[in-house]
Amino acid sequence: MTLETAARAFAVSSGREEQDGATTLQRQQRLNRFLAGVERRALRFAEIAVRDRDDAMDIVQDAMIKLAQKYADKPETEWTPLFYRIVQNGIRDWHRRQAVRNRVMSWFGRGKDDESDYDPVAEAPDPLARRPEETVQTDGALDELGAALGRLPTRQREAFMLRTFEGLDVAGTATAMGISAGSVKTHYSRAVHSLRAALGEHYGE
View 1 (spheres, rainbow, N blue to C red):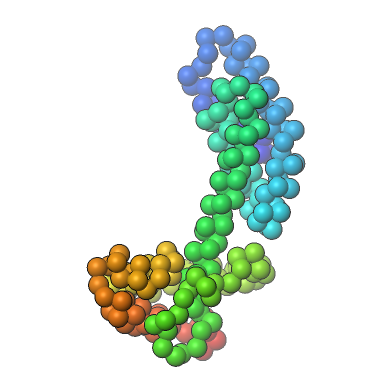
View 2: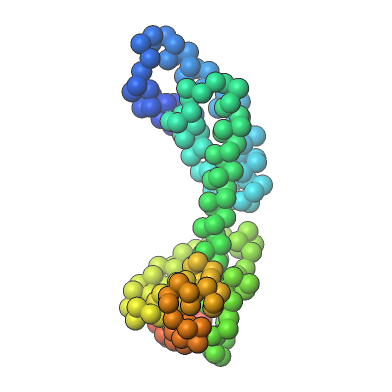
């Protein structure tokens, strides 16, 4: 399935077809052989990095498609480094998404005390440590969180998103918002308490 998808991507990218159709076909065959030879190793490479086979397969398939679309006309000697660069970029993107998700979710387990000094980056759990059932619960909580964020006052929403989604500290958030550090703490703390009131079910309340 992965190779078929990459082959289709190659066919689309060859809209700028070479005048010699045989050359295009030969290049496609060489690319298919390259992808068939590298697929298993790349999947293992990605699976070790993200510890999830389905996500690893997605990363590898995306890399194959991108190689076919953008770099099929490069010399064959360049395919291997280009392909693994694309895979590594996919892995880095995966980790960034997981880091954001875990920063968002990390405060769900906190107590009801004042959170103005809480650091969502330092407290975020390991993105590779979650069990499958925890991922499902996280997905549901994130959907609810998105709706609840939309109901917050603008400043509270900005403070929460900059601190939690972007991982900025209090000083960085203050600079981004153009307000004092004390105001950031106030807006952030109010946002957290409002969100917890709206999302109590995710705390077992």
